[in-house]
Length: 179
Image 1 (cartoon, helix red, strand yellow):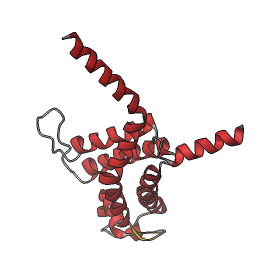
Image 2 (cartoon, helix red, strand yellow):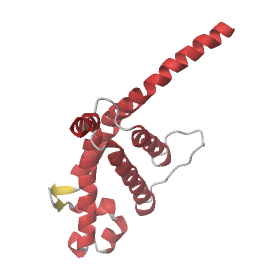
Image 3 (cartoon, helix red, strand yellow):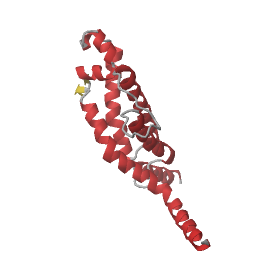
Image 4 (tube, one colour):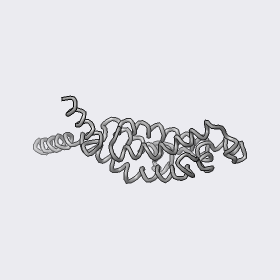
């Protein structure tokens, strides 16, 4: 029995040493496969041009305010337009930074904020049911799914991008310049 525990401890030690590079690399890979396309597709629905928000974007981001002005984006102010543009560009830029591994911790932190605001907008503005945790059902669109998104992004905030990243290349270049 002692031999089994010793083998187990050795396997755990080996896997623990691999976690620092493997965990962030896998997190970026999963982000690429599951979330990057989702956010880019969402961003495309918010723009009619690089600096021209679509009418539907106002409905997505400001559902109650958009309804209150009779679904006329011209009745909303400059602030609404700037928020829509910032949201759309964030959905393009933050995932791109995560994918290439540039400023990954900051980009992942920005995505966490984005997902929290998105979730609150869905729950409060659109009336989507949040679902519940610890209810034996794993299909709540907001609480269950987005908890996994936030966990994935938290791995990147805490661990960084991993060895195959622009962050690593940039860090090495800075060290060479400082020497």
